Amino acid sequence: KERLRQYRAAGLNAVCTYIEWSRHELSPGSYSFSGENDFEYFVRLAQLEGLLVILRPGPYICSERDFGGYPPWLLYENPNMGLRTNESSHTQFVKSWLSVLFPRIQPLLYGNGGPVIMVQVENEYGSFSACDGNYTRWLRDVFRSYVGDDAVLFTTDGAGSGYLKCGTIPGVLATVDFGPSTNVSREFDALRQYQKHGPLVNSEFYTGWLTHWGDPEMGSRSTSSIVNSTRQLLALNASFNFYVFHGGTSFGFSTGANISPFLPQVTSYDFDAPISESGNLTEKYYAIRSVISEFMPVPDTPVESSRTTDYGTVLLAPKISLFDSHTAIKYPAFEYPQTFESLQQYSGYMFYETRLPPRFPGLGYLLANNVHDRTVVCLDKKPVGVLSRSDNIYQMILAGQAGQMLGLL
Image (spheres, rainbow, N blue to C red):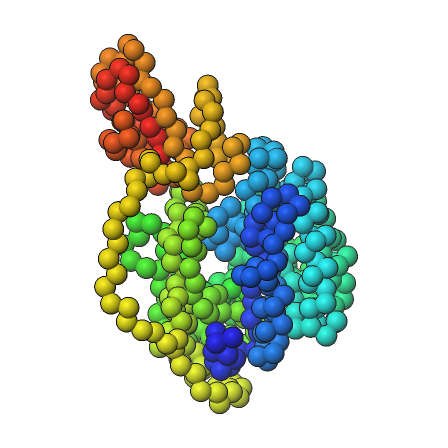
């Protein structure tokens, strides 16, 4: 509620949020819509705070989340599934999920008295190599069967023609995304090539940027560049969504990664947003509020940063070795290493272990071309090296003795 009031006090009239499939369908047919997963409560709360709502239910959402918000059990069902395509092994699960999700969304739609004015179909599909128009048109029809005329369906893509070529869907409002620009009007040129009429919408106006592990500093955008572009957008009478207005956190192993090259995101999703990850109102927040007030009335609502306290020094003491954990799941022996998904383990750590053969020469190469993130190599449970997809390290010289236990964490 505090964050939503901070939004409204800044002069915003809507809040945009994703619905992450993986958080709601934990296993096929097993659903969670309570606690932190109660998006209906959030939408109603936004309405009470005087905000309209824009929903982005995917099913692929990106959002720098693990697997783009797709549930990882899809790869247990079919390791070679054609994700984000019209392949039947994929669409059967999408259709089933949406048949559960949309009846919850329907009462919240603007045409039914709710605050939801727009619903996004897929997410930046023009950036995906498949370019499967059969899939996006099928998805459009599924969405429309539930939404009807009670809210506006839209797509989001990069502002270039190359993105809009495969991202736009006939009969669906096309929008683009871009960050601060010295010439905002020009950023809409490609959109006008594909959509001659209708509103100009930047559905992701970047207030900052994401951060990858290994980056020299946190991603950011200057306040002055945000203010200048905001002023241009308002002068154009364009609609836009600050992405993001409030920074957040991808706890545990839930953050995602870019590919080609592989760049995993850090846990923090502060994004240099106007409202920080910890809830502080930044200089950028007040600057945005000021520029909005040049074009329209801003609520005279007193707001402040989240209250904090000093907990002093917190001392942590080691309790148990990772290898001695009694909570670990023990798997039987396999001839070859198994994937996480094949064992229905979708997060956390996996420890693969085998014994060096009797004729091991004492020195050899360890080659693991399919490491998907980072692997700590151990001998008798003691670390001896690291393999890393980020650093393109897939092999190492292994010095060991016959009979030692080789472990990959």
